[in-house]
Image 1: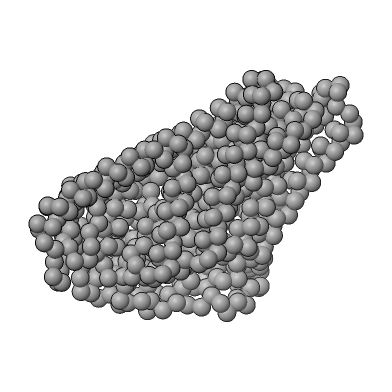
Image 2 (image 1 turned 180 degrees about the vertical axis):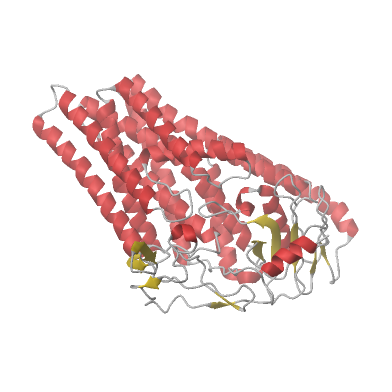
Length: 562
């Protein structure tokens, strides 16, 4: 199964059951000799994960219900203009997300039907049609050909028709995300009950990734403009209706929730990063809640007086942020044009909040972004204060300005608390690097859990993260430098894990995508299909290994593979 048109291959190694003969793939004969320095370590599905998904469902329904309720209230009050705008910002983004969700379902189901109608049981043979690779389960009693071609085929065809009708109805009713959340709860429960041999891990990870990507897109297409619209109406009318405040609060909370949820799911999906705790998620949610709140209030204040100039400002800011992201050479998508389109979507996110798009030290980028947004918020609020209408009293205007300032300050406070106390890679501490001759060259950041990576062929492996100071471009201390101050780890919880040698490995003939991008098997649905098939035919959940050019042994294997 190829990830791109260049024919990059996928291989699987298992000690007894799986055989994978693609010509360009690498098959490791000894499972103890693993070239990956980041072993697969699945975190069991917990009750907190279940509660988080249920809370996400509650946030989804609350946001949609308050917006529709407010639109109906505008209609009953004969405010048809506000009714139309409110309804448009509900229906159009939801329809776009439903179309994308249904397109993913069609692609996945079509791929399954093109591959003998999906994954089969452990006792059946499987042939991946449309590719040069054949994966075969050996041993066992096998499956009866009559059972596969006879009544079983008709049953599967009937089930597919029912599933298509069910999915079509759900997406027409704008409930595609609800089904995905319920499905994630089911997969999580099955994963918890059956453990590593339940063949649910990768299905759960893929479903969670799809949900967060869809909800993040919907949040910035629907909640962000809805929030600005309702705040503008409140400021223009100089009064707050209960439903307006409820709708604006739900939109703001949904935005902060989805940004934090996206970051957590992205970290959980990568075995080279430590997972994010729920305390960190809550603090990050508060960080975005207050910074986005101050930003949208400043937008609404300015838009209530200067509608035309507000549109020019938004377009200019979006173009500037999109250009900044593109020149950063991000690595999110599988093709150049998809990358540009995704960067344009990220430019919309950058209108409201910071969003990490490139691996490495981002302190300068973060402070630059929040300095620019601070100047913009002050300028927009000051322009409104100077040119506000005569109906706005000085006391009311002063209160609004104080709300903007305090909200932004609280957001920065929670951001500092997240990075200094709750970041998954550990708190960033300051040290001093002194060159040969006593000249201070720069300040260095050393996470609490930073440790040198062991050789990749060792049976013990480092934690699920790269050192935040690894690499010369991230302030690595080169030989010959004298470390004057260094923070050592004080937490014994992050011990080295022992590699489970009995676990099968899916080796991808692709370089790993750079964090914070999703790995290739999360965004390439053809790779997903292959992984799910191999997960079904393996005795335990396989792990993913990408090509690593840092290991000389693996480089030699790739160069000598026919």
